[in-house]
Image (cartoon, one colour):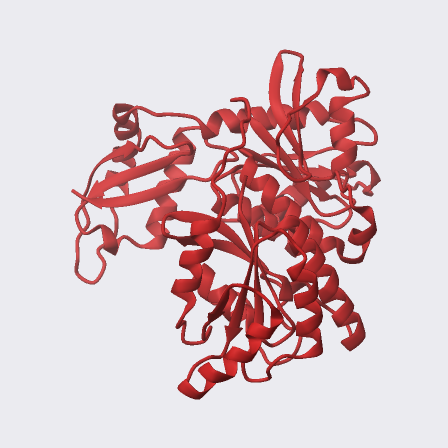
Length: 433
């Protein structure tokens, strides 16, 4: 099961700065205006060999002061329910506020591990100021400065040491997660696939949280469907569906081999679809894009082709992904979607012998050798596929660190044109010969 660490706290305590430091990118927009962080709300953090997802809850809050506080409360509730651990951030400069106190009350009652992090402890006098936060009643208090990074290493050491190991006992079958924005038709697709004959569906005991894992076996096909649509705690969710569905999508992507990403034909690919797409790509999961509700779109000539081109433009450079136009309601092309997912699963597990690789790709390299970079010449000797659960190719060469991004893209395109890796991300590594 994928581990999620959620960062909660009131506005402007430095959640985005810590988030950026953890995922190693200046991703969120950092600004003193409350609620500016919008677009980038989750990313991967790797520490001491463990990889987990960090969610910056600040990216989900919008609206006026009072709506703001209500939204923050909702998020704390969802984070408690859905995350593996919670980093509760407070600000040493302002001291304890009413909102801090209120969040602390909610967080103290949970079984989820909570790490109280006092930010902006960046000089000696502040260290004594930080002691007032012990009164919030948490047994772990960490003093950090998210701007300079001091203290974040110690915090991560503790968080990572206490994250649960993955122990879900799933049968060894392809795992497909149906992901997408709320109301795009995920539940309907699931019901259409599983039908009323729920007896062919076995829910697997012991799978954590609320994502339901069902084994599908009919028409000689067998796989596990991971459903994120089964929102059980309806009452507290309708207030912040976007945040909730993102938390759900992250868990499902972690559990799966292939992500079936559904988008609504009437709106096209939106930024949140792109976020889910990128997350699946970063996790090296296979991807199938389903354009649902295609029956509701006014058709002129070639709209499917134009629509497809537009999607490919948005998702490029990784545009070698099956795109299927369908309607769950009209039961159009539902099984096509499953066939595509099974094919991507096969592509993702494809192993190519070293001799085949070199026969196909070395001539392409001879035709277009890597350009010299800063006076360094690069000579690629041979290529081999590494024994991992997704496609990774090692290129043995001289001066590997001088290979340009554009040339790496050329090599990936050559691999894709010679071998079928449709729908699956490819990783290239360059090693000194």
